[in-house]
Amino acid sequence: LKDTLCDAMSKLIANKKPFSDDMLQLCWCFESENGDQSKSKLWHAITETSQEIMASHSQIDWFWFKNYLLPSNIWFLCNADGQFLFYELLQLAKKQANEQLSKLQRDMD
Image 1 (spheres, helix red, strand yellow):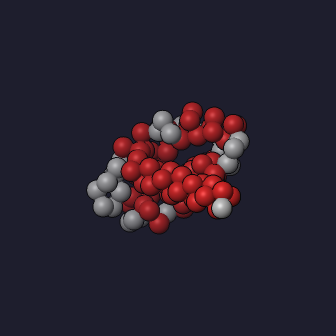
Image 2: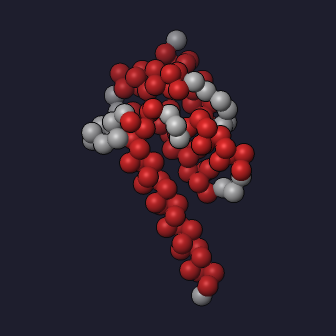
């Protein structure tokens, strides 16, 4: 049942569908029982979807991100290194910003 729930949550996130923050936290707890959450299918779905949205210009995707994923309490949980997951989201945003800046610099040259 745990695996089914976590798979369903991963698919909801990957497909940018509404989900319950309580269910996301429950899945995160289940994933932590299996070891390093950063290698889980759920974390992969979260990071891949976040990167995809940050790279896109889709207002619908940004709406979903701002209303479902970003306000989640999961960002206040800690990773294996004891850092808040929010810092990993910031790293993804910084990486995307650097990529866009590099692209702009290439276009200007």
